[in-house]
Length: 334
Image (cartoon, rainbow, N blue to C red; front, side, top):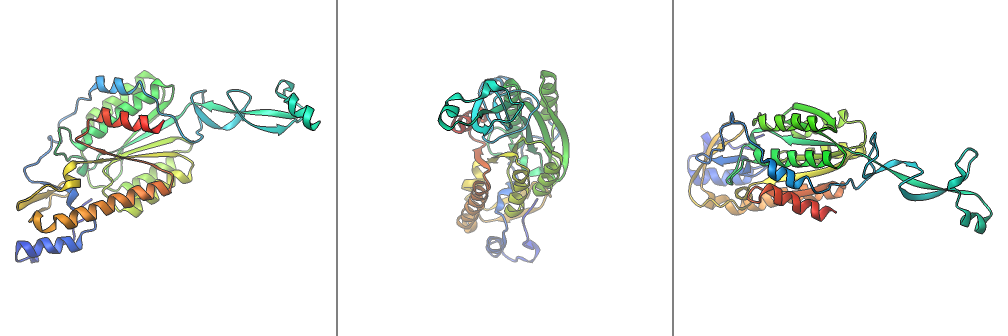
């Protein structure tokens, strides 16, 4: 989605136009790229580095909150049973297994209590990959979409290797691919095939897509969203909150290019809109300071909003290899 509202046809001089842009931005110029900084052709299919994916998949990603699954696994379940990890006592009822009576408590209180334990279960994980036009940007070696696809592959294989189920959702302004979570090797082949074929799509409408998917995911799960999140921040947070309202655990992986943060341009530059094709000429020296301030505000609003909603937020830069960035995040999350 483009966030440009200036009518450049009415601007008589370059400086006037640049100054008008500063005052009328909703989001900075990060949704544009310099005309000559074209990414890989949209029709090109990517080849995901399977060695790097396999290396990451030896790590572990545990849910921090209770999730629902069909099989035993490594994550806490919201249901109680008589195995795994002690949770609490409850008073004995006729029909309870006497093996779980706590005789020490009986000796102290002269009442029968049963030990309850937290069951552990497997996890369903949905990896949501943004494939909108703005994901086809980079000043690094990989486009944002290539980087995100590699992350999605790593996370999917990691889940499958630890006995969980992985699913994939690819979207732009609507859901383009929906692969429900499954837990077998053949399923991973389907996910890899979908990731290697995905191409940059249309405008972004992340918030609407998040609401749609939240309605489709019924069982408590983990939801990982990979995107540049160039959309209205309040609408985005509302969409993410929809998952939290349904008791899903949510992880946000925010992919950014160094140029979007630093805005290193120092000469008059022609920028091209990635998603709609608009072209604008600006003098970066006029707007660089304001751009960086607005972009920093955007990042802080998104990070703070996620923190307030108990959503795990991680920013990743395309200049940092995806395997190293993901390893760092998973190590810190333990």
